[in-house]
Length: 37
Image (cartoon, rainbow, N blue to C red):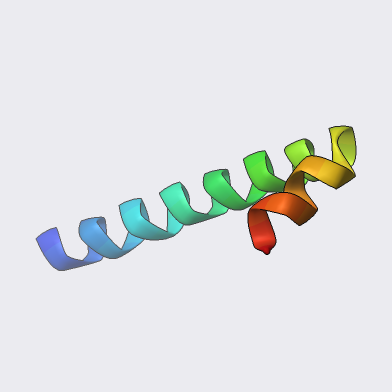
């Protein structure tokens, strides 16, 4: 059970981070390009 919770939590955090990155990218394309360099 604990292992499933860890997986779920990890995926949840990753998806939140991805959404935050997308929101940033939509607001400031230049800033994100600089981060990716």
